[in-house]
Image: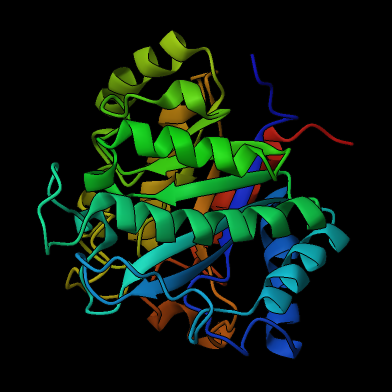
Length: 317
C-alpha cells in the first residue's frame, strides 16, 4: 500500500496566473505569505492551458496564456526552497468558458467527427511533457487530471495515460475527481493516491464522508481532498462550488464552512489532508480582505482557522 509521508496541510498556488506572472516580487511574496500565514507543508502548483471548446481535440499548452516551462520550474523550486512538498497540477480548460467536466465525444468513432483517441493523444502529450518536468524538478506528486467528469468513463485511455506518465515520472500519481464522483471512478487502482474536490454543503459533510469512506477502504489507498474551499460571501457555505453565487462579502460564512469541514473530517483517519482552494499569485491588499468575496482567505478569519487546524495535524519536525 502506498503511504503518504505525513498529513497533507496544503494550499493550491498559482491558479489564474498567466504567462509572465509566475515570477517576480508579487509571486515571491505570495508564496512566502502562504507559508507564513497558513503553516502549509504542501502546495499544489496549479495552472491551466486551453482547448477551444469541449469538442476540440487540440490542447494548446505551448501557447499563451499558459505559463512557461521555466515558470513552472521556478515555482516548484520556490516551493521546495520554502520547505514545501509539491503536487504539480496541470489542468485543461475550454477557451469558450465551458467547464472542463463537459469535455466529451461520441463513445464510438464516427467519420468526420472529433474522437476520443485524438483528444487523449493531445492530452497525453500535455501530461507527459509536464510529468518530465515534475521528475526533473523532484515534485513529490503529479495530478493527472481535474474534475473531468465526462472523461472518467474512458477507463482504458486513462490507464494508458498513467502508464505513459509512469514511464517518465517516479513520484506519486493522483487524479482529482469531481465532487460526488468518488464512487464512480472505476480505475482508482491505477493511481497511487485517491483525491477529489470537497466542495460539500456545510451541513452535508457527514453524509458525503460516509459515502466516500467505503471507496477508500476498498482500494486501500491514501485519500485527501485535492481541492476544497468556500468563498467568503453569504450563501456560499450551502453551495461552496459556485464561485459566482450572488451574496455579500462575509468572513463569518467562510470561517463557518471551514470549521464544519474540519470538524467532520478530523476524526476520519482515512482523510489524510487537504489542498485548499486557493492562493493566487497576486494577492489583494490585505486592507481589502473584508471586502473580498473570493476563495482566498488571506487576511480573513478563515486564515486563522486553517492555520490552527493544520498545526494540530502536522507533527513537529
